[in-house]
Length: 150
Image (cartoon, rainbow, N blue to C red; front, side, top):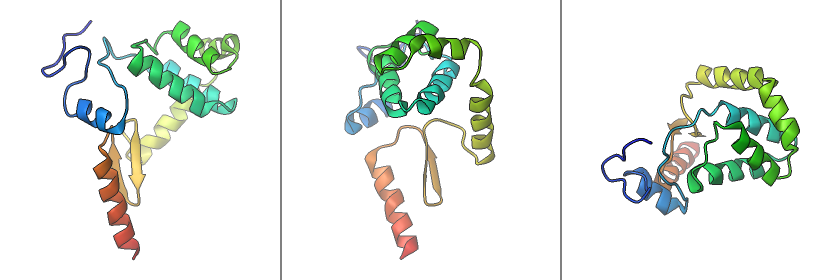
């Protein structure tokens, strides 16, 4: 387990992310380690193809940030998939056989072409920003887009 950064107490994140998450009404606890997200990205693509994208996305978010589970662990991915009604055996087989790895890698390469270097990335008009952002950043971005359109 990594050592807490200055300002991280009781499993909370350091600033400014702690305040941003709190203001957005999100639960985000400090992770003991950063998981390899390859399985989670491929599983998200699987969920998309099976009509369960949002359900899987939200369940994976809770598993990682609320429950502290390792999304780099196939067993955890299987549990998350099953919790939203996906066939976890088929999902795990798909991941083990790397059936979606070229799709996800293609999406990654396409994102790089557009200058996207992180998740999440937001594009509002011609403004692009990455990572958790406070609400006022979105408000200011929308204000600028609307002013340019007028």
